[in-house]
Image 1 (spheres, rainbow, N blue to C red):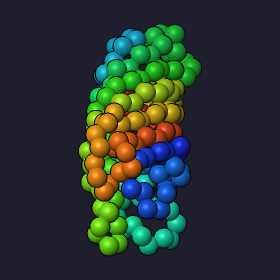
Image 2: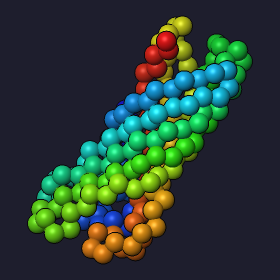
Image 3: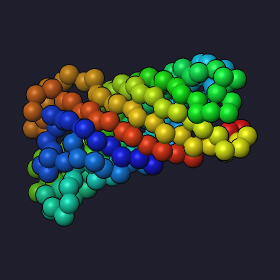
Length: 167
């Protein structure tokens, strides 16, 4: 669970809300060696393109699905402390905006990159907590009439905290 913030887009954002903080839900699964690992990350931010009680937007969200490489401080060094890591990868970002008139609706899936880092601390051998900040950006440069101002682009930061279960 976390927040998106610092967003920017060229897509038609009637409420101008993409830069505002927004709740995000998600999860990830990782396979980690001592230093290197791979991860799949999924995030869903309902209401990403809407602010307050405004009625121009009926339904909207931003969703990310990425595959990533993880580089961590060796486990034996961080056994009793917070373990920092860096993550970077690529995947897909989907933007959905349904306006009240149905004229400027957007449903776009764009290739995306992400990078960030965080720390994980374990409370027991199997249960821990994770804190992370990650930047997401689309890499599409296509021009689409009517749904964007110039090349389609969406980017934002995500800060999150989560429960970690180690198997």
